Image (cartoon, rainbow, N blue to C red; front, side, top):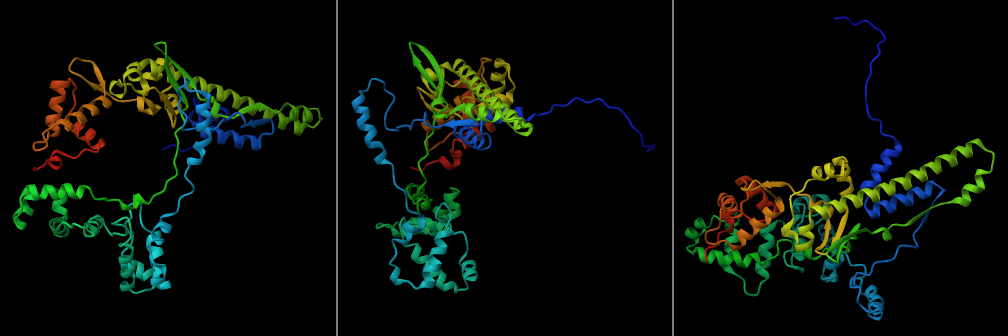
Length: 444
């Protein structure tokens, strides 16, 4: 092998990402809130960039968009809606501790109770064993167990359970008309009952399948996630980035620019310091002026790209905007990018975390992109339409003889003209949160 040292010339071609190009790409994928935060941070480091938030008007969620409403009615609503905003909610710990008689517990017990409540998961289940808690707090397991029993007497029923089985049993025991058969089944046959292996249970308990079906229906009414009842998440409102409206049989599209602050060039600052003969200061002003111009240009490019993408979506999905989600046609980002003569990644960034308000409701822009499913007529349909067809079939099926995935696939091909495999049906069914045929079967 020849390992001599030397100098060689080699010609290569590569793409260099400038800071300005990186910024333009970042701004394109920003949501309105992210863009506002970006501009606020830029204003802190660029004295030539002025941000004016006074043009932003708060949205009144109780005032509808019917322009025929009288001004007096709108004014009356505006004076009341802010009073209906919920005040800061109490924590889960406060809600549970308020139910206890504090004087009935020692300081050690209260310490354990607070620890268990603080470490519960979102479902309201404890996340550590009694032995682990006792070892961590250097207390006896018996004391920890007494504290857990106290928590399990609180509302909602099932809070503080160690698992789903215990959670359901606590709720059954709390019922005034406790179901003895349900309690026996959950205690001794929890796994086969959940897996619908009911014939084994009928033989051992000498009951009928109909009786177990009744138990199953009753248990379905219990709450497997009692902790969710205590969660107090703040209400989050979705603010659309674009609005599609129909008037005179035509669709109009506009961006929600009112939600963005106004940007101005600080001419007085520039004039004050540009007159000073300081090379370093002059270079600083030149850089900040160029930065301002790039930001303005990037924002304009973002607007143009977003309006182009939404316009093309409306053109391709006209039936959706007129009749609803059941008429969503297959469309991919690659299809849109080729029609707009832009890169597919540009479309992906343009629709990221952005929403559009339509006559059919508010949807994320990504909602309109679905995979293509072939039909027997050599045309195509969207995966969304296939999912709707699967859901409709299962809704109408005979629950004593539910359709298998293969039967659904055959029905879609023969009756709906949709060519899908059994595995695709199973995948879509799972995405819809629908159980398999064996678990959907009823024994009424």
